Length: 569
Image 1: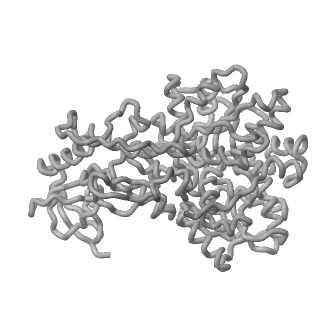
Image 2: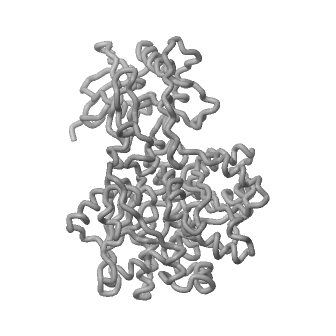
Image 3: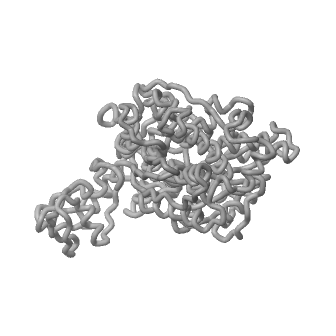
């Protein structure tokens, strides 16, 4: 690869031809502010906050899109560049609501941070502040177009990473907005509710629909027995909200904090992840033996399921009918658990802490509302962190505590549900041992968008593939649809890198942070005494005392669901 040599702020740097000035500056440890730029997305160059000065021509260049040239002399913090940056940010602020104190992103807003870093203390421009309606009619996401700075990140992530294209620019000039087709509520379009738009939005133009007040109210209601379940990935992400290193395992502190919030019992969704493996693993065995159609496709990710219902509804019969761990837990909490505790099922109120905005959509699915077995409230990781801070709890100094028993015991296999490839590995650990008695320790799946593996089970080969990010999933599903697939087991996670990259996780995030989060979960798995779902003693007891056998009548009634065709448009 040819290289280019240039000078930035008096320092020489050699970079690959085709690199941008922003990339070259970062090679030298020089930080340039950005807003529309995002490392996972295509270059846009719209906000002009990253301008630098070409010392030879005096021109201002948008460093995120300007390519390097040999012999260039660039000054990143000349008076001309600094004044231009400040002016561009002040122009954004002139049309912005500036309601920072009551904003969901107060403290994690990139526009707020850049305003502070550039020393802007007043706005010298008077602009017209738009008064567009807020879209909060759906269960998952809230769009506040008045807070949009037209950076285009949400449009690009939805199109490039997710392949959904639910958002687009419309109108021109001052009237420009980012919206859905026909300006419909986001809940009425082909949107996966994955929340990746919220993870890349630099302001609060897109956030999750809040559920905190609902949970505070029920915690104050003495007539309700309020229990909480925490998703696997939360164990290695929650610490970030309190200044801890990404990937730090905070399982014990999480349990302690939830008790201090007032929950009557604190449980782990990991327990239900083990239960999911028992049902889905046996379902795959049936398919593999020829009783049902292959390939088997996982269904624990609600964003992926909705994407499939819209765009690949001809493959619905390939989806596992097993409910997600969150929904399985809720079913068991209002039957088995309520009976064990001698509590009226109607008094049990189940709150789920999830990494995912699409879980709010799942909670409201009609199919999961039947029989009073639904999840009652879903909080994202970010929402729970706000509640902990509101209570004045010093999270990082909490003494570790254990989850409550009955629904709190889990295995390492359940923990890795929180990262891409984890469901596949957990399922095949159980499948191989049940079919052959032979052990599977690690499958060796990587972290890329698409990863393949083959596994010998007896005298047969199981071909598996995992996909994270819906655009990657579409590539595999197109092969299945065309009859060209060689796979027996397909795992799909809507969010890049799996639940560790979920739409409700701490901000900011990037691939490096997600890898650290995933490694935290792997560390829990590798240090665990029990690493296979079928060896969880509480799961065995649940089947012995209540469910009978996997896929039996009672387990099918409580732990399985159905899906439906949705309009592609």
